[in-house]
Image 1 (cartoon, rainbow, N blue to C red):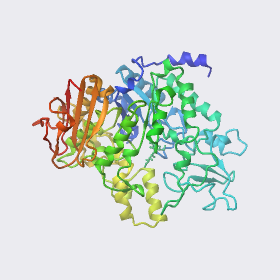
Image 2: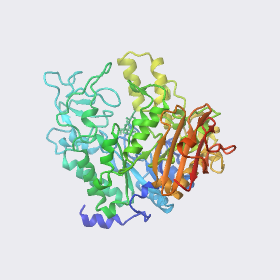
Image 3: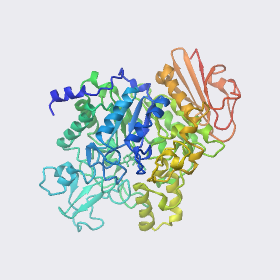
Image 4: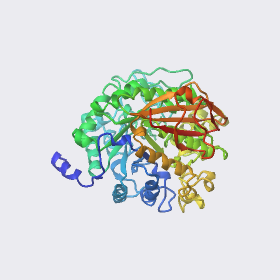
Length: 591
Ligand code: TEU
């Protein structure tokens, strides 16, 4: 495709939405996990027409961007994060025509579409990989990471893998391929072989594909584990931690030596010159990234990405054994982590803000209290704390309704490859008692956030007229959109108000942020300032009454701009009494 063709194409379906530099600072992003959003044809799987049928819901929430998790052709080994054709839609989700209609429908409502870019790996059923594994001499052999067995070993035997890295989804990170007698690298499942980004042909193919989507009207990309694309030369063995079955390859594939170069190349090759590039949104999913790395990745002058998803606050309840070794959340630790990122990107760069996504449990169940007594008020408190911070907020589908974790007690309840692989390895290889493993999977498993969105109290919560691919969370009769969208006291209305405040109060999008009371075990407190204006947020993130001396923070008066317990809002001063999960934001005209 020549630059000329490309420039002609680009004008095909521009959103035509205003794109001043940094527009995404005032934006709120809504993440859709298509498999679980809405099913339009009764096959029990969500699809693109199901999203089109619910555009009013998204528009009513007031969000500015939809991030659409993968809908590309895929054997669905990892629910679409294993792509076999980047430029086609999987029939279970619909067609390219459906997606064009979705793009047009969103743009007509002033909403942009960000696609999921999964290019650290492809599916093993992608023609690129099928060619690559066909023979050592195939021109695409070097499009993936192939290596011979470890010297002195019998290829195919345990321990013969080229290095000792473990896959993130359990087992070794290498798969032996009988046909050519070599191993290929897969940091996730064996059906997700890693692409070799050292190969310029691979990079060009990805740039072409991304330009193709831009020409179709896409407004940006969420880039899946994009900080894994540059691996350290020699792929050295990783340290084997106590009790670990494999070496930790993370230091050798996360934030690799050529990552900045590859990110800048994508930006340049796909989004063109600076004037052009500002209209797009790019967010890099970057597990394990530090504040210092993020300062570089999100520095506008370097034109790499606009923001990243960092994971520090996602690991505050992870024990030494990782995600499935849960420990209680200690609020000061969570606050210190978020404070570090707020301070670190205050001058330059930009934060994303999120409590959950399709890889994490539901926010209200994890960070709030999903009991009947406190579910709504704590869901609203979490919304207030996150959305009034400095950064771009992300709402994961159902979070605006206060949806909770589901019931995951028997292995049959699970669908997610990460949990199923972990269970198999824990019980069959480590010999752990299933009764010991299942509660941890039930607590942290990704299926918690992948149950169908609860649209109403009809069967299957109005998600499908068929048999849903995963059970609907049992509390759907109480928690659903139909019961909330017109109820001013609902979680939905609270989230709608949060979006409005970011749109209308410059202090929310542009103000500086100062965290307070970092050691307080109950209260999350911070203030914002912009010019002569100030905003104070006090949230009691506990089930017990809490007290704050706001005068010590310099606040003795202010106008209430938001609360989640309308009656009896506490007055500012030396003794601010906050009820369980009460969250209030005050504003004043002098910072
Ligand atoms: O997730 C990467 C990632 O960090 C997660 O796998 C996370 O480490 C894991 O869930 C923690 O338990 C991205 C996608 O968001 C995820 O859905 C995919 O499974 C994964 O990449 C592979 O594409």
